[in-house]
Image (cartoon, rainbow, N blue to C red):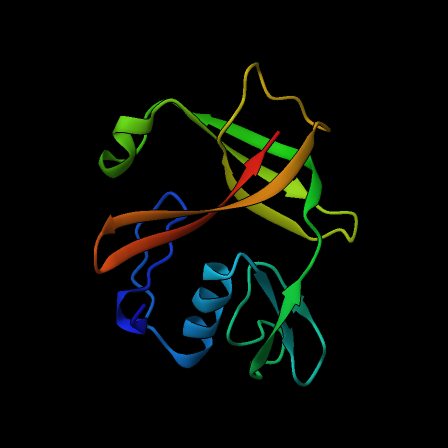
Length: 143
């Protein structure tokens, strides 16, 4: 797949420039790998990754984040979404907390009942083929 056709979909439209850092992040998602970033100067870690450190403004490097299981830390049920998400409403967005303490926000897609703080979550990846030349890559929570 050509790099120019890669996109990430996390429930909202993204307008990030496809910098080499961001392309590497998208390529890893395409391989079902989640990346975190680590500041090259002060070692601060970010999930989801950031290209520049918020603390010292140095460049960050991408590293694979291997944890896949988390606990539901918090959630919101979206009844009145933006127009681009109206066909999916209502939907649940949850913050999962990994054993390392890192937190990640994503949709919870397979709920059969009301979400409960502390419930087990598993990170999953999905590729949505939009056309022959275009696809969207997403990560999500499964219960």
